[in-house]
Image (tube, rainbow, N blue to C red; front, top):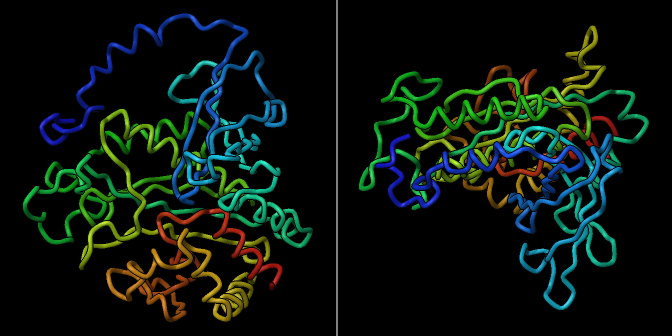
Length: 361
């Protein structure tokens, strides 16, 4: 990637080849590096830190609980800032390779209560309900994101103007249509290596905006897989000196926003005559629209207000609507709930869907 468009990025200016001689050093056979990853107090940011482990874990419970300073992650006050990290999922580390691992963690405060942004707890409770297990809920999440220069402007956009109108960029091919495909390809391969079920990617409607899809994932794994894929995306972009934003409306006006359209099905929906079950689920969803809007972005719907305007291929935040192949609908039959924002917590989204469509809460 050209240094000219990243002239103010300190990371882009570093010579990455210098690192190779250190990463090529032999790693002791009885030592691995475990990258502990968690959701911070913003609800859409990820943090991480590394520790050395003297054995290769076969399951998350083999790993030690760890702590961090929650007052520096918007999760605690300085006078009592210990927050605990409980490992819940393990993935292969595509950055260090060998036997090194990525460890997704839940967070608990000093009283061992879930932090405000630990939405996984409630989601896991729903997924463990017998009625939900019987239905084997599958999720596929379409994660849209925008690449930015370090000055906060979309990568490759003119500094004192705008690119040409939307139209040629979606699934585009060519140097005048897409920007930073290297990051997209690196992220795709890194997710495959890590064990994330990434199943596709494409350039999006707005230049410098991309999408990838994760799934199908069963139950709680949908949230785990998406959060790890986001961590990997941020880390890959970091190495290129580029910023990733999950802001659902990074550029005001008629430029497309970014969502996390969520494909969802149950065993009944996937069976013969499943369309009738889909219709029943849509009826339940129509009666709980406001509840879902509050669950579909970290600000209780405030972020989505900027995106769900009824234009730019979105529904109105104030109206529930369903339709076949209708990109202005809330639910596109039979595919997806189009309301979740790009910075949504997938645990909140999948939790809301199963509680409404299966548990009828």
